Structure formats: structure tokens, C-alpha cells
Length: 112
Length: 110
Image (cartoon, rainbow over all chains, first blue to last red):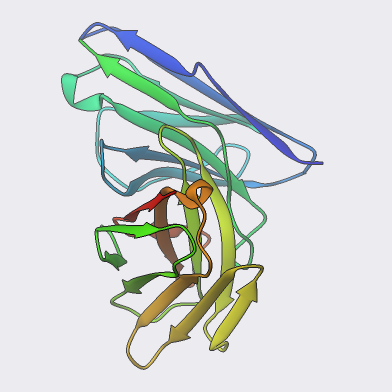
């Protein structure tokens, strides 16, 4: 069966520090991968998505970047965090437009 | 940008009652999906309805889609306390990405 792992669950980082959030998928090949951010009490904002290794599409200009070094690994990074980067980050995968998404359990990031 | 808008923003009902949530969107779609999110957790996929479908059922869930009005509804029948969560609609156009609405917070009281 397919599973998705996302870590860490919570993270408190100082302003200006780097960030690396990792997401891995098991049990499927060549999934589409997604990073979303959710502000408190709000909907989800699509940040990045990838349809293959090394292919990254950015949806929102910001202080973050994403990489897909392996087929089932998706990494969200920042060189210098801002207070506005705080939020709940969710990774997800799907097999394409006609399929639902499977989400990870999320990372709650607080930048202080 | 967010494609879908859910209505109401919050809904409180008693166990056993039905809960109806609505979603409106702005552009043509390939499909519309509904998700549930328990507090502080990831989202769980509930149901997908394609643009050429009008109604779909899954257990106690019933989803309708009216593409002429660009709207969808999610009905949860005989609600339970465990149904307490936020519910989101999401639309897929002709690309492999979902755009989510703002969500409806459902509270079911025992």
C-alpha cells in the first residue's frame, strides 16, 4: 500500500535560519508531488508541484524553494526564514488529474 | 489564488442531523473533490466527482455538482460526533494541481 511520510511534525526556528522539510512516498512510482501551506484557520495555498525528478513548478513567488532529487522524495527549503513563513506545511502526492490526493500529516513551522 | 469558496464558513449541528456544505467556483473544471481535515492533521480525500457527473455517493456522503451554476454540495447524513472537522472542496482544471477553497468548519454535538 502507498504511504507518505512527512517530518518533522513541529519545528520552531529563528528568523534568518535555514529550513529543510522532507517528504517521501512509498508504494508508488512517478507520483505527482505537491507542497501546500495552510495559515491558521485558512485554506490551502499551493506552493510547489512536481511531475517528475528535477521538475519543479513554483506557484507563488516567495522565500522558499523546492527540489525533487529522487522519484519519491520532495524537499522544501529556505536559506533564510522570515516570520511570514510560519504556517502548517503539507506534502501530498497523486497519480494525476483524475485521482485524489494523499496528504502527509503536516509540519507546523513557527518562525520566532 | 483560491478557486473555491465554501459556504457556510462554520456549521454546528446535533448528532443524527444532516449537514450540508456548499462550494462555488469560478472557472471550468475537470473534476471537483472534497476533503476532510481534523484539527492539526493532514487532509483526507473523501470523494471526487467529474465534470460530466451530477451526483455521487459514498457511504453517508452525497455530493452533487452543477456545472452550469459552478457549484457543488456535500451532504453528510445522520452525522456523528466523529464527523467534526473542516471540510474543503478543491477543483482541478486541465492541469495536475488542485486549488482548494477556504473550508467549512463542522461541529457535531453529541
